Picture 1: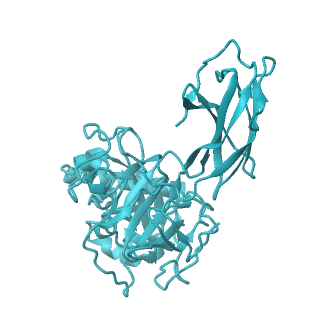
Picture 2 (picture 1 turned 90 degrees about the horizontal axis):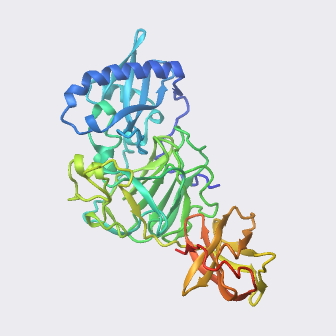
Picture 3 (picture 1 turned 45 degrees about the vertical axis):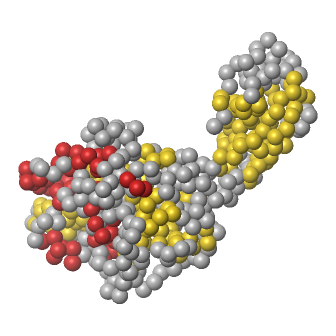
Length: 469
């Protein structure tokens, strides 16, 4: 488990004596939600021209109430017409108690600034706080290159949003962060946790993974300082206890090095990573890093000169940076097939392994027992999660089922292959090991050797096999 190892004076977490807000109870949340729905329905007509009016419905993600019970902060998630809640940063609206009911306050209301100033800083996400007075950043005038998507080559994850972060739509609580902060911020998601790797080589500045999964009040993160240029890669919402212990402050990591898994920690509506590069940063919110995003281009994103965009963004929202292309069908912008981006980020630490059975030259299989015992020893910087035996049949390498997972803690795999079901021709057979690690790195053709198959499948040659990929 990696812990926070560096906290400059700019940290703006709870101060001694600050009143502590609490998460709304179910009855409190219900009352706040009713008040919000009434205000939301009243204001819909004012924003009928905005595309978000018809694209998303609000969902109450979290509600927090001040210690004196007079002020509330509501986090609003977005639900599209398919019923899917976007995995991104929530919108924010305030509420002020008036006698026995709540009055909802949008960012366009004159009371907004007054309420915001009255709240303890740790009551708000970092994007709603001001940077420290001494924070200074240098201007970067040209796009930065050399970045790759922050997950392993050959794997794909869904872009949930980019410019949506700063689209101005007060009834839904947006923007969730300003354009200066989030113009080049990207949310990537999937059905559950997925492993993150370094987008570019750099040095660990600080990290935290002590927050429990799904915690709305504690954000896990890691920051890397780029090896060239001195900018900072910020990865937010990581899972509990997944950052490797070796990644302490000052540790250099190559591009493609495993950093931890995604989750929903902190200011987030569902599991995803919020990734951006900044020219400087400060600590805000519950103590996570924040800053002004700079223009970075992904070498493995083929559209928009390296800028990812979702199909609903390019169809309905204003165009930024000339980015008008998406991965998918703009005519059906919420198709589940849209917005999947395949990484080209080659892993820095691929797994290794070797077959320990069958031995080279071994005589395996018989009509009485077509099962062949296969064992392998593997190792990785995180862990090896899957293995399969490969065989060279009819001029190509194929997988002999099954693919097996859940090895022993020592990385040892032990399984059986039914040679008859695999369609093995009797006689010499070249075999090898293929393995996958936690990040998704694949290594094939390990421990290549020739064995002899004796009578295992004399009458059932050429049954189906899996093409190795």
